[in-house]
Structure formats: structure tokens, C-alpha cells
Image 1 (tube, rainbow, N blue to C red):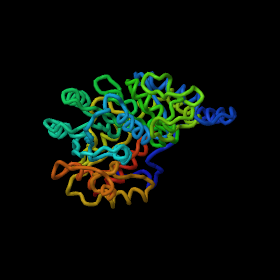
Image 2 (image 1 turned 45 degrees about the horizontal axis):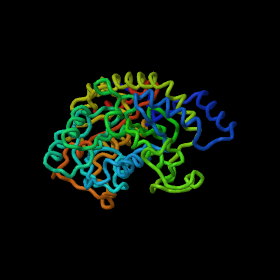
Image 3 (image 1 turned 135 degrees about the horizontal axis):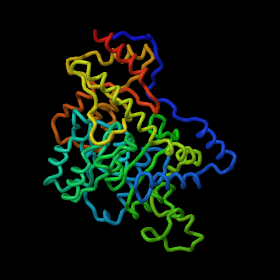
Image 4 (image 1 turned 90 degrees about the vertical axis):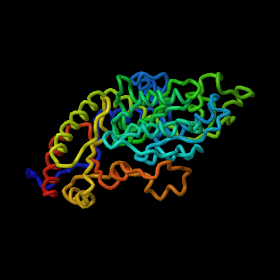
Length: 397
């Protein structure tokens, strides 16, 4: 196979906006009301309905969705006397999974991942939980659009009185056994950053069916006030109605979105099914190319994957991953490691409260050293893949 072109512009992400998103921005600018308001509320209602969830709460990023979600678990009445401080996490993910957990005061307990799906190793999860008694939650990261073994994880959590949470920032629209990922756990988080399935440029969403957690998250989103909380069923302050608007109940944040992001979100959500179908079609083309490269594998679909991106795992005797990435970059093809690789290799660990119950994390290490990631877009990448894999073939041979 010989590349038709020696150069092609294939970045990690590309815009999926057209005049509709631009018009939505203009309508907000013209309204004169730019901070969180009716457009954000409308998008929240539409998103909750699309997901099949009771509640959706928009924030300024997927990381912030995790942040207020994990903090909300601390103030939930169910956990008021809870001594459990540990949350199990996979050792392959992005920083926005780990930092909010640490910031909320929990200890990170790392387990390895599955080589085929790249998701959390459920056997190791079960091994840690059984008999431990000190695990508060499992954070299941649905990696690169691919669902975890969520039915099994749900069962493990129910049998051991452990909370299930989903970092679903990369997996909007994915399904496992006909249920949307992000709706299995106590809460699910979503990101609308530029490279994601839906793009409001910045922005994120928390979804939950737990009314109390939703009310707590509403307060945490905006300074710890309860002025946005719809009633005093779970949160209340003993003062006048006038004073209530200026009393702080919880140590909250300011992670509110803006009206432009809500308006754009509604437009993007209308296009969601088309975006997902395009990404799935891209994945079939990509996987067919990878299959033809001896010793390489792509991510195995688990359930219904919506393909945040496309990965290649090279054999361990291939030592030129970084050189290949540089070669492709010179040809206009942008690549990166698979997320942060093995997160245990990051120097930031010295600042985090964590434990590693296993001596080695071999799959995470393999992904760290031999994995390569290519972006998916909400448009066909057939030409980009043809050139990319012709160049990979040229490099390997």
C-alpha cells in the first residue's frame, strides 16, 4: 500500500459546528443575558430526557462534573457517618478522573485494565472489594467511548454496599445491554470539550436519578448557596427568605456554565445520532486497517461503543512508537499516547493519596509504551485513514 499523498491534514479533533451553532451564539449575545439561565436549563432538560435520567446538571467542564459529583457524595445523608475513604480507579485514564477524587478527600486505589477493551479489570476490582470493608466506591471509566462491564460492576457494588460512579466523559451515547452509559451509577459525568462527541467548546454535565445528590450538586455548583435548589427537602437554612439568598450552606465552587454553551448544546444534541453513526462507521474502517498489521490490535468493542477515538496497541517488541508518531506528525497526522498511558508513571502521584494493591500493572505499562491514539471526528475519515495506514505501512517496512 502506497500513500496517495505525502501530506494530509488529520488533527486529533475537528469542528462539528455550522451556522446553527453560530446563530445560537449570536442569539445569546443579542439577548444581553450571558450567564447561566434559560438556555442552560433547556439543555439540561433535553439532555436528561435523551439519557433517560431524572436529573441533569450542566457545569463548565467534565472535570467539574466529577468534582461536584464526588463532593456531593460526601454531603449525602446516606454517607454522613461513613468511614470508608477509598475509591477504586483504573490505572489508564485522564487526570480529570483522579484529581477530583483526590480533591474530595478520597484515597485512589489503582487496578489494572483489560488489554482488549482498555477498561477497568473487573477481576481485580472484585479481588480488592471482597473482604476489605473499606472501599467507598468504584469509579468506572468508560474509556474512549467503550462501555465497561457495567452489569457485573453493578452486581459487585450491590453485594458489597459499594457505590458505583461512571466517568463517562468520553462515552456519550454508548450503551451496555440497551442502557446508556453514565446512567448505571450514582452519577455519571460528561464532557463537551472540543474533541468530544458533543462540543460546546467548554462544558460538562452530571446526570443522576438521586434527587438528594442532585440538590447537593446544585448548591455546590454555585458557591454552596441553596438559591437554585427547588425545595428544602434535603437542604435548608433557618433564616428569612431574603437572607437565604446570601447564606452559604456548603463549601461549594463556581463551576457554572454560560448561556452560550447551553444554547450550543441544544443544537449539538439534535445532531447526536448522526455524529454517533459517523463515528461508528469510522471505527469499522479503522479496525479493518489495524487487523492487517501483524501483531497489532485495536480496542475491542464492549456493548455499543461510540468511539471517542481510535487506538492501536503495537506488540511489545516494537520499540519505535515515538518515532512513528513523529514521522506521522511530519506528514500532517496528529497522534498521542492512549490517554495518559499508565497514570502511575506520572510525577503528580507524589501529591496524591493513593495505593497500589498489586505489585505490577503490566497491561497499563504495555499501553503506556506501545499504544498510539488517533482522533475520531463527527465526519467521515475514510481518506485520512487511507493515507495514515499507507504511511504506517511505509514506516514499518
